[in-house]
Length: 252
Image (cartoon, rainbow, N blue to C red; front, top):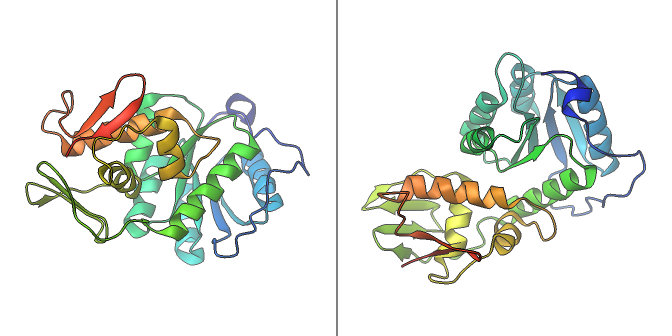
């Protein structure tokens, strides 16, 4: 990665109030994997000011070792790491755990966004980012993780797709479909109300827990991934439908 000046550090001033993580049920240890010393230091100060315990790693290699030793409640990963890159780091963590992952990127490249989410990330931030946005998203992810799926065990049927929230399982024509945790939550949210139109803002709040922050591209990318996994023809979806100017709905 290039210099801190090129990618930008969090916009923050020491002592700036950004909310306090006062939910004792939420895990407070965060693993920060970032090779840029300046950004890593600034981000650590931001998180510690919120009351989190922060473990730092300058590379994916050292970060993965630390992950196995510390069992953090959330992981922040820079995508452009030297050696093992951030994408591979996310995959390795996701294979071992459902811990929330936020990826950091210096490029607003849609391909990087899709690849990062597909590797197992739950959310992303583009540098430079504001401290309040980072901490708000971490709080929401931790809160969501502590609540579980939030759905009962009733099976939901969408044509040839069956969703079983209690088991965390999706089947298409009887064959299990592998979804990320966030893809599964998004599908459950919409499948519980077939035909109802969900705006991006509502989905960001209900699925990601972001009442006032969040990027609509996050929803769009996850919908794109759902279609790729569930639809016979993703370009002409039969299950997850776009309602132009309003949002998305699923059809039973």
